[in-house]
Length: 360
Image 1 (cartoon, rainbow, N blue to C red):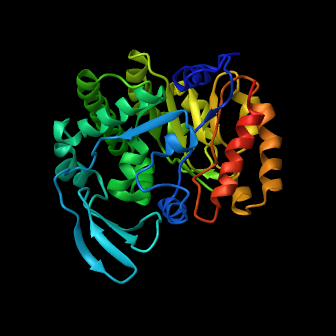
Image 2 (cartoon, rainbow, N blue to C red):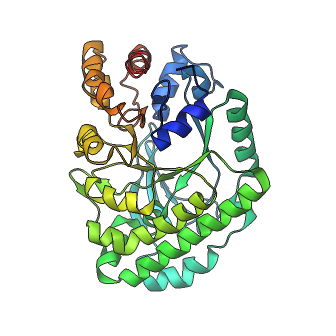
Image 3 (cartoon, rainbow, N blue to C red):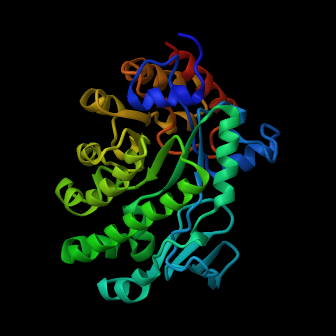
């Protein structure tokens, strides 16, 4: 097959139609890029998609804070950490010396009353929530390079827990499900309303990429029944809107979410990403079970890259790529993000070897 553009390639991969090779994309920890730049592998302003030849570019352009004008308030600061109150009324402690997930310290919103009185009235589709220029710039660059361009952002699960924390959100799902259903509906509608404003003025992307970390090690955060009752309606709302525009939908989820995959397919997703091995996800099993209905991105154990042993990297690729490329619905990506323990040369080998193996 003749070489395809990235737009053509990813469009077909998401529809499981013939392509010239598997797709390519990746995420990195900021510390990794700092290390590689200091070693001279990347220039300070270099676009990663340009450098590695990725098939996609993303634009994160929505501010979904309850109060988008709120200036984070410093509550406490040490040499290593800083505790901030944000526009959701959440108190989060962040490390200053390295990238990490912030520690959830406390939340203003812990129940339905706080949600209805303090937050819900603020969640309006105001234009100031949209970075029009950032979207336009990313879209134009992707077009120039003939890359598949996606609007990226969080969906309802990932919008709720920064507001009230996993603990209060999950207790609410069990004890006051109507409260959480209301949050799901409001956040889903706000997302759609903002997308309508953005796309009408700046044009549609090639696809939509939602981020929803709905699992941890060996377990999802909720049962499949609870997913279908509470979370899936928000997914259906947002994905139906994307499909009304003819846009395919990628959904990211860290953690073990295999029990929820059937429900996500029902909601309309076209591709599952990131398929985290250390959490219990199995790319080959997912491919066997759903490969005729679902495309995949990820599922390559990043711990093998940690070793910087190229023979182990090759073994991981050889065990998976020849199989999952079978239905044309696969894009190469680690099963999480690339940390600074991975050498640039190791990652470069991973890309080169993976694409060679994934060429049809």
